[in-house]
Length: 218
Figure 1: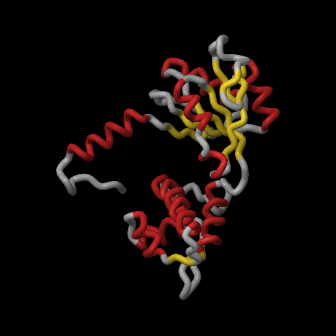
Figure 2: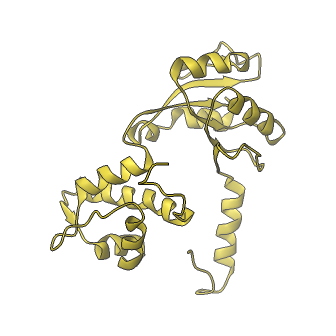
Figure 3: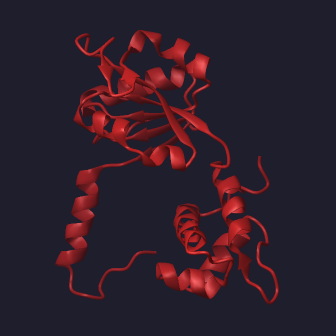
């Protein structure tokens, strides 16, 4: 196990690392060279104690009398998240959501390169969408091996998502981002994150519907 990523790190702390990175990159664009835990926390609505606790899971990055060097901390957080290198990614699903993901420009800047798109619809396979020629699912393993792909996005209807996940895992994928409105079952060694837009809207409506001060994010 990587000693910088202990199994005991709470998931909320890991999620906040991405928030810290985004905010640090914003500070860097503004020319900030150093930042304190208080300043970083305030920019995200967190306490300085929470920032220090989260970062302490992975090491000691502050400097007495200086705080954190912005560029150094960006590099360390990217290393912890694994985005200090380029990850080749594939997408299954060339429908409306898939096309939106294909055209998203933010992946490259964060270290993710979409290299292949697959679909089960014979009318789409072999056709070009943007810079991609849609691949057949029959070629999954060959494409995954050729590009050394370990991450995949699933943007297919719910009734097809579990079968697609099974095929991806069998072909060597070790991390899945699921956009289908279905809870997938994957082996323990496979990382799985879900993006269900309807659930996010339900949570938002709940927060708006509740009286002020009765909900908070932890």
